Length: 161
Image (cartoon, rainbow, N blue to C red; front, side, top):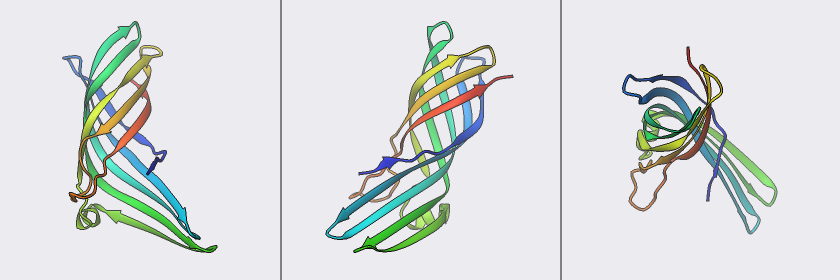
């Protein structure tokens, strides 16, 4: 039972001659979870950083509004985990940074991929607001008993020149 974390994303994109939108970004994804039972509680937060590439197909809906659909693939760069464990009011915390090698050593998959759907609203010729949803299809861990995948809402301001 996990909750999404706010993260950031920045990058570049280009509208190709065939009308497709291609881009590359640094994307931050993550989640938090907590539980408490019988005087014991824990809070956990994991942030995962990716270098991503995507291709989107715009479908004109109205003047200045496009529906977007496409795919995204990401390469895991690094991450951070923060944990706090408490028992009867006595708490201990731990923070750990990890890189791609650490991620692989813990049976993590470096490659993430999924489907992107959303919309784009052109404020003017240069500035647009883009909202998308990433639905991850890759299992982020090499474990048949455990499944973990990314899902994220993304809101971007796009500036073209």
